[in-house]
Length: 192
Image (tube, rainbow, N blue to C red; front, top):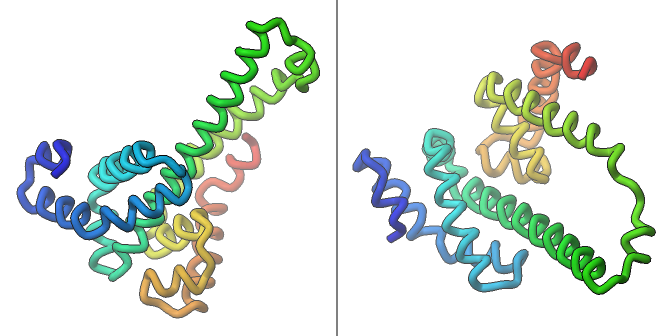
């Protein structure tokens, strides 16, 4: 058992997280390995996914009540693995550029486009994402869950299956959730 699970104070929460880990560990590993293609990275991804589950334990308990716990666990693991993959790709690119500079091969570096102007766009984009996350967090659970699952790349059929609703209900909740988002902060969002 992971040490982080043992550190959970509430016995019921500890048992729940331990059960999730024992039940989905292999499936999470396969999901992570499929993306990362490296044994240790996949293991790290599984452990970090368990940490994410602990941080959002109420959401995972709600998913269990709705019968969609397995899907949520695997989607969480998959998304974390994709983020780790992107971080590794950025690091490899940086190391390659640094190596080129050390070897005196400046030509490739000089031909890179100047991205300094895009830094402000990136910062604005991150601020906007945080703002949207705050707005989504304020939504009713039924709309929030559909928006979050849709943002993770699931289609309406998958969302309907995970949430135990019809495909049409998933679409309607998406429409209503977007409408509420615009009502709550749409004007501010466009000013950003």
